[in-house]
Amino acid sequence: MDEGGTPLLPDSLVYQIFLSLGPADVLAAGLVCRQWQAVSRDEFLWREQFYRYYQVARDVPRHPAATSWYEEFQRLYDAVPCVEVQTLKEHTDQVLHLSFSHSGYQFASCSKDCTVKIWNNDLTISLLHSADMRPYNWSYTQFSQFNQDDSLLLASGVFLGPHNSSSGEIAVISLDTFVLLSRVRNKPYDVFGCWLTETSLISGNLHRIGDITSCSVLWLNNAFQDVESENVNVVKRLFKIQNLNASTIRTVMVADCSRFDSPDLLLDAGDPAGPPCRVFDLGIEDEDEDEEAASPGPTRAKEGLRRLLDGILEGGAQPPLSERALETKVAELLAQGRTKPPERGTAGALNKLLIFTTGCLTYSPHQIGIKQILPHQMTTAGPVLGEGRGSDAFFDSLDHVIDVHGHIIGMGLSPDNRYLYVNSRAWPSGSVVADPMQPPPIAEEIDLLVFDLKTMREVKRALRAHRAYTPNDECFFIFLDVSRDFVASGAEDRHGYIWDRHYNICLAKLRHQDVVNSVVFSPQEQELLLTASDDATIKAWRSPRTVRVHQAPRPRPRPFFSWFASQRR
Image (cartoon, rainbow, N blue to C red):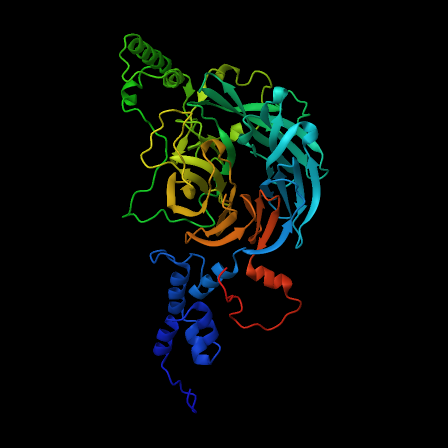
């Protein structure tokens, strides 16, 4: 400025100069004088800085809750939990899973050391209780979940049965007394299990029908197994679903539909002029189904089976069917007349969705099944012995199916339960499964897909940054988690990853010494993230903003740009 206080450079020229600077230099220059400070806070300047620094596509608008580009730039830099603040080393083997209580005051961890540990989530995390499951013949613990009021903990593990056979088991632990209340068998073990209500949980069982054909039965179990009543079952069958080509139901979870109309963050389905989003409503697959709808299901099934067998005996099947292909074809025909159509709920009913991985071509989980749970199905009340006997011979059909054309290795719901995030390792484009026991090779890159459970459409483009290296037959689950604004996942490349849900960009990589198996945000504070690894540690990560608040010994003045570090994380 000159002696009279008039700026020597017009604002437009200062603005053009600032456009050529990086964010840190712009903030530093804003301390020189009032004119430069005013220009350094210009909204158009920070919009350019935002798109350039974070490499966001220009057609992506600003976050709907943001009030300025400057504050949005600061949020993505200063509010992401990327600073390691504590490492927990109480486990003695690989840590496989983490789960938070709904209040955020506690969390649980599961490990190959066969313990379930419960922690107090204070400013400094401390161990509250450790439950050793080896006395119950468990090999290791693999998954946990708090019920809605945080009074009970569901813990899932691998159970060693007779002749060294392995199956699964679910234990329910009281969080008031840490007493083990009940144990429920769970087969296969990677069904994991989940809560349906505060006192009832879902488990699985598997029944072999043929070499590559089976059926999965999902059970609703009372958490308190000592119930004595004529009208309260300890266990009740929920669904019975046919499995083809060596597939099984795994990884069950429940989505509450009550918040679908008021999501925390409404994700854009994409450009209407661009490629159409995938729709995954199962619908009617057979072109001639309408013509045959008038004939009863069992009759059509018998006719189809008769035609198939006649063709085989007469040598008319072209090409000749293998034993496995023949088994699958016969199982499909027999199920036509023994599968109940979906039961429709009443309008306005507070229904829930049961979500699980499955398949139809191979043992590799490449589909996600969705089945509506109606209010009358959410209780074990009813006749104890006679219930369901008449429907034993029937299968339940699925309401919707997602086929991701790849190996599913992780799933997680947004806090409002509307969006389903899926970790998948893709099959090669155009690949065909000729043998159910030999699925296609899978990519090292992990795609993080997003599906809208209200519209039953895929939204956003796939997020990609993390990697995995194990082949199909050694592939394992990598747990992901979703907060209001972020989504995080582990990976086999020794890092955890954090993305922004709105901008679809990777914001941070969190380093471990081995595979990162699980990540979880605090449900009350998304600026706190926990990661669990094969290196037997749990790491706590906080945002730079939170770290400054917790470490500040006393209030002191700070420059307004102090949040911006000199080096990119």
